[in-house]
Each structure stands twice: as structure tokens, then as C-alpha cells.
Length: 84
Image (cartoon, rainbow, N blue to C red; front, side, top):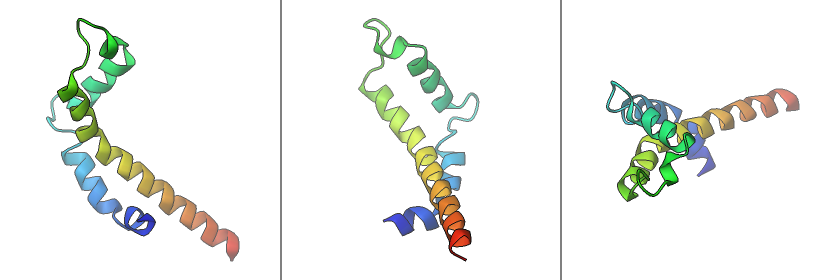
């Protein structure tokens, strides 16, 4: 699994640029992040519903996978240089 996360960075990049930014003007994930960070996601009146949390997962997961892949590749390069 670690090698799949490490080697599929191109797929994660494409998914992040398409699904992660969809719809493109304005990016849906940015609105959801602002909603969560603003504290309104948990209020009773304007709180996020189940579909909103699914949107956060759907649009945010490609970014998380891309970040994990980049970090694994960077640490792999650093350990390879350190062992030589």
C-alpha cells in the first residue's frame, strides 16, 4: 500500500486538479474549508449536513492522497541520500 501511495502521485495530482477543484469557479473545497474553519459547520441553524461532510471528503481526499504521496517520495529521497 505504501508503494502504491508513493508511485501514484500523477494520478493523485490529476484527481486533485479535477475533482479537488470542481466546480472550478469558485472551488467547492475552499468554501467547505472556510465553513469548517469559520466555526459555522457545527452550529445548529447553518450547520453542515451529511451531504456537506461527504463533499468535504470527496473533494478533499485527492489532496490528502497527493500530500501523502509527496511526503513519502521526499522521505524516500532523503533516506536514499543519507544511506549513500
